[in-house]
Image 1 (cartoon, rainbow, N blue to C red):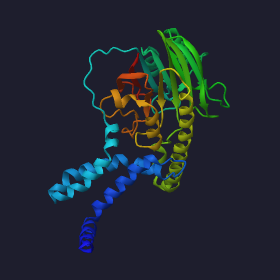
Image 2 (cartoon, rainbow, N blue to C red):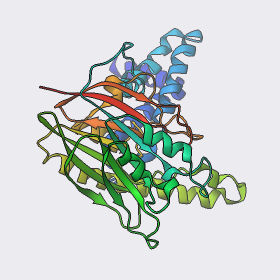
Image 3 (cartoon, rainbow, N blue to C red):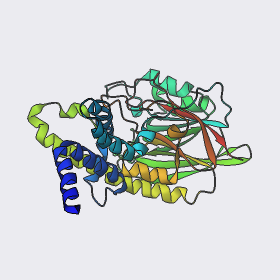
Image 4 (cartoon, rainbow, N blue to C red):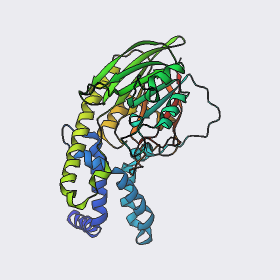
Length: 358
């Protein structure tokens, strides 16, 4: 009897092998977020497939019952296992009127304030927008300033508007090119420093401590290693094979490097006794080992207080959310938004409003 039941079950799965494979591949892609890229790097690419896997199973959930109702169990199981990923993909919060908050934080990768699709000229519009933004704290990645040239004296414009500053500049061959990260604060800066830095690269992590009423607040600004998604480089068919190999190598190396940088960030925040925010360009989608590791240590502002999908990449791959705000358990996010009005950079600014828990 058992042998007959086994044969029936085996025959059932063989008959619907394509749905069985979809379920198996879905679960494998979900498991990939628990595998460190430094241990098994192909897991990085399996995790990139998660959004497509979720969409495929949603389509199957809708269409399969028209052919055979009992087959709905396959996409249903896949989506059930994928529920945690659906919950971090989209956020639904009730509409808010005027919100009461203690402080606001802007995160913005400004592409060194260069013009859209250009590396030959600076965007005065973007510089003015960033300088006039009224957020209490501004975390700028790919930051550039030149005090000797008024149009690009970004730091001067910010300080004229009442902000204190802490800047990090990458060590480069050309000392005239001051590029890196910066944090601007309306509050007095009590302390500041670097968490890590990469020679010759704008990727780094910095922090400041500010006095906010009776509280001391720490702000981290991070720019993790790039994903190297320069799509225009891969257009010519003649070079597809070599370019694809290079892209895979860059994605692999980038994921591994970001893992090491997150190690340093977690170690640094573990010693912080204050409420803190970690803001920046993480170059990590919500479907990765590195992102889930961050979630185990911090709370994500979009997931708690955002609406919609929170896409922050202003490029062909518009569906990426790689700019994030995280915080510890001494803070509560009240509201989180992606500001799509500033379209010059390849990243949209992100803005969140916070309360310090008493």
